[in-house]
Length: 126
Image (cartoon, rainbow, N blue to C red; front, side):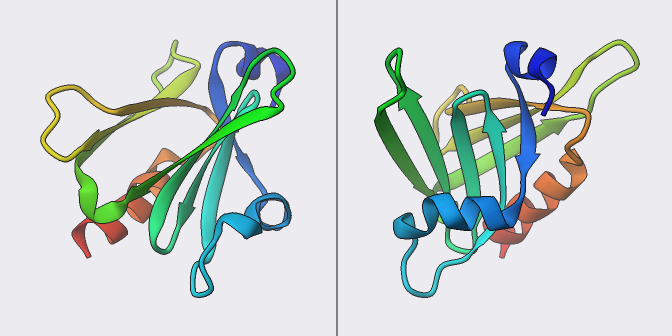
């Protein structure tokens, strides 16, 4: 992920090997990371069981919050692709019956938002 995209708040894909190395202790015995993205210091992971948001806090980032959202709690989601003049694509996720999206993430053009949508659809609809 380029520094410019990171400063603009765009997420970039992270290799599965790196994600497993850093976050395997968060997983249950039968859980596997399917894809993940990094947004400067924060990370969000799609596993075969849930969505995990990793929120680094403070100036040093030593304090970390892990938010776990079961796919069955996701009521709807939207994906907006990048346009000609847009630098990013956007993912919005609504949890339960909330009126406004609980999660809004932006991706740089290196991320295939159709793949992100496919993983979400597989888990939310399956």
